[in-house]
Image (cartoon, rainbow, N blue to C red; front, top):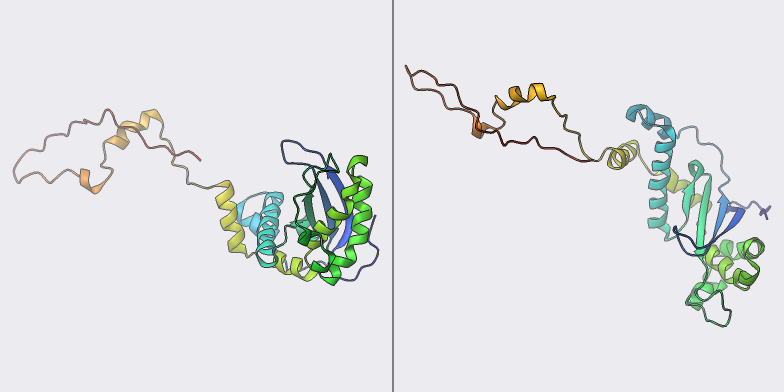
Length: 235
């Protein structure tokens, strides 16, 4: 199943059939390796994890998500980046009516036309068709060619994947991490014994008591905020 011809394009490594479930319709998922040298200057995972006191897996997932967004917006592909930028995965939904081969597919012929592919994408179709055919149920194999072309059209170049993975900055990662795992500041809740002290002090300038007239005896303020409730924030 492996694509032995390493020409710089993403290299086919695996294919899976995914039955219809709560996570999505019937589809196939194909994985490609991105052959490149390790990037010694790419320090984001360790650096961000140290600053955020978070797990490296969480940070790595955020970087992959940010890189996937960059790749998709710049190329129009549906590919997702995984494994620290060394793998991409592409999914394709089985055509409607696939259980009955007499029912026409809703997919446009333009999407299935090999001439719409780049030379590198077209070269990947034969290996894709063999790989997809090997994992489809017997009654679905008539769609192997269509699915192979659909997947091939989504394959970005190796350079596009590498460039997208290098785009997120440390600031991007920190902001995304905070949005995902710490979206709002948590307001500490005072113990019950300390709440009377909190209520004894003005909370805003508008509630600050005015200065007593000269020579007058200050009268202790009576706490009339018995119905006051501390604001709480949910994450």
